[in-house]
Length: 163
Image 1 (tube, rainbow, N blue to C red):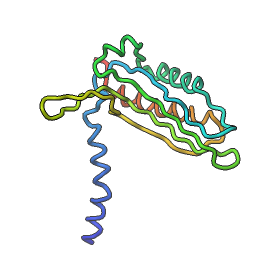
Image 2: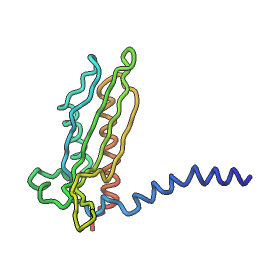
Image 3: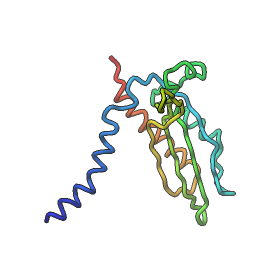
Image 4: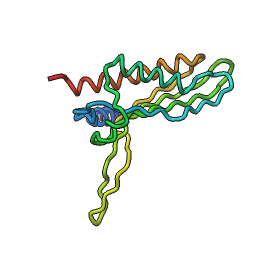
């Protein structure tokens, strides 16, 4: 019985640790985000997903979910310069089936402290979600992107309630 209790604690502990990481959300007081779509990595001759399709879906979703999109000028002066980065990988598996991964990261400028009073500035992911699956059509991938953007929006709005 003691071994079962130890095993249960070992299995459940990482879940509680991961949940506590987001208790004080990095999304609190975030006024909006920029958007960057990385070059699509599609390893297939038949899967027709374009950069424009992904950009159109991302912009539409941000607007539908009421997440403010910052202009490049606003982003340059916003503390941390927060932007959402979209990455999509697709590879042909067999027949019409393709395996995909859609990743959404909120990236912000952060300063790392170094010895001798030196700091290093770099862009770091402060929030990240991804989905993987099998798709026979490109619309499935853009639907998953919309789903990830919905997750971001839900967390964004839950930590930025109107006063």
